[in-house]
Image 1 (spheres, rainbow, N blue to C red):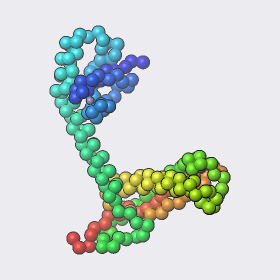
Image 2: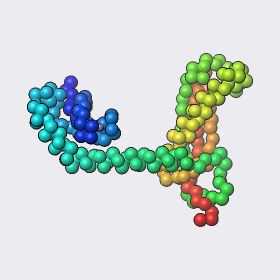
Image 3: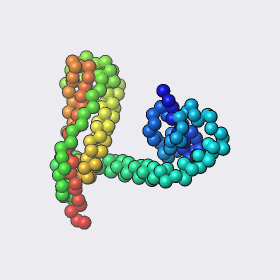
Image 4: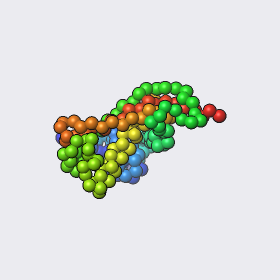
Length: 199
Ligand SMILES: [Zn+2]
């Protein structure tokens, strides 16, 4: 299988990739660019040829463009993350002092976890909490909180992508599947846009 030589002009490091597809540099996050050589050819060209080639790549429009693209994508991701973190959530259907100006959609997501993750428990879900000892209960409660946090972030990201800034009617449900070996925890919420009343 050929390996393709890529280069990060920022770190001056070359990478071997099995696929001829651009990727970001593992060290600095800037794009790597294809040198035009496979590994087998790479070692047959002179040092001077290499440094010239790398200099050209660094100044190429393609590299600058890719760099801009990555910067934009990173900024977008950051912006999204901030929105996900600050999205307002309620199990109710309104926020005091705010009006709902747009309803987007009902969003659903689910996470399936092995009961092993919650230690081996043979009790049914209903008496799960009462049948186990205090420390186990704490551990399970913490794990559940983690799973719910993850679900909330997943749902929030979908909502943010729609242009929503709040989630209403949040509902979590859990059910056992495959006997008792797996637990499915799901979350539904309605994505909305809210605005303060006195703006
Ligand atoms: Zn780099």
